[in-house]
Amino acid sequence: MFNVGIIGCGSITVKRHAIETNANDDTKIFGVYDPNNKHAKAMADKYNCKIYDSVDDLLTDDNLSIVIVATPNIFHGEYTIKALENGKHVLCEKPMAATLELAQEMIDTAKKYNLKLMIGQNQRLVPAHIKAKEILDSGELGRILTFQTVFGHRGAEKWSIANSPSTWFFDKEQAIFGAMGDIGVHKADLVRWLIGEEFKAVSSFVTTRHKRYDNNELINVDDNAVSILQSESGIVGTLAVSWTYYGGESNATIFNCEKGALWIFRDEDAPIKIKYANGSETLIKIGTISTNEKQVSSGVIDMLTDAIINNKKVDIDGYEGYKALEIIVNCVKSAESGQTIHF
Image 1: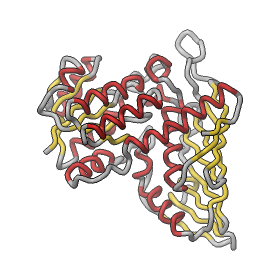
Image 2 (image 1 turned 90 degrees about the vertical axis):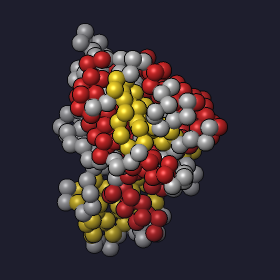
Image 3 (image 1 turned 60 degrees about the vertical axis):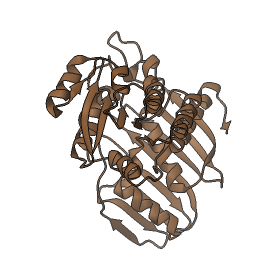
Image 4 (image 1 turned 45 degrees about the vertical axis):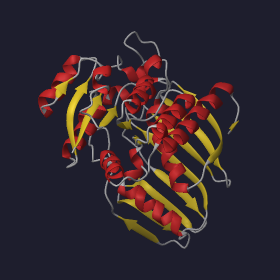
């Protein structure tokens, strides 16, 4: 049994990490820390665990085997590195760090201490996405030519435990990124994994269109972004993210291939629809995907504990988190410079 310490008792912990850690036969919530003691107490009361007085108290507790870092983005790198230095395996939320340099330091520290570092890029574990990768890898649809991927919902403030514009998601000092870092990093990771190759160039528009603070000023992070990505082999596609999809959430990806198209969460009839070039169609009803209104198990703590128990590589490790972050960082650079960024 692995004792788990959780840093951060916001919505991602309340709605996902605590529930999934409690449900896993190999893990137990041993203790939590949150600067808002009210949030920490609610978690401790529900799961009968201790409340730490500080982050350092949690990180230095020898009773813990795993630390979950579920804090504002600015703390991801610092707390992960400290946890690893204190002998803990780490599950860190995405985006994994505020900078690529800090992300690399996280990777190096995990390697130095021979510990597992997993990044919460959970979209890879969605059954429909796993099936989609099998289809694409099989060659059934031929080469991938282009893609479209989108993730949009009503806004981080609707998800946040604050449930208001005062959320840390709207504070650049804590969040670093806006919608691009919050949900864009999910889709960057997903399409990179699905196509099985690296991206080498991006051209982006990253903007703030509608979200405002209580004083009616626009928030200081992005709420919308559209990017064009090009892969090593020439696959081109669009990645669109938004916190202003007030008409309903969208989490769809489409691959246009030589022999047809693969639609993932695009059609209401099934999570996967294959539209062949000859006009025939195949529907594959497999699983579902989390929304802000309804969560399904992400599988991240299960993957981490399996890797620890069986002493194997974590499939969604620090390197994978780094490559997803690299795409997002370069999209932001492109928008700021008005140039296509090659990397």
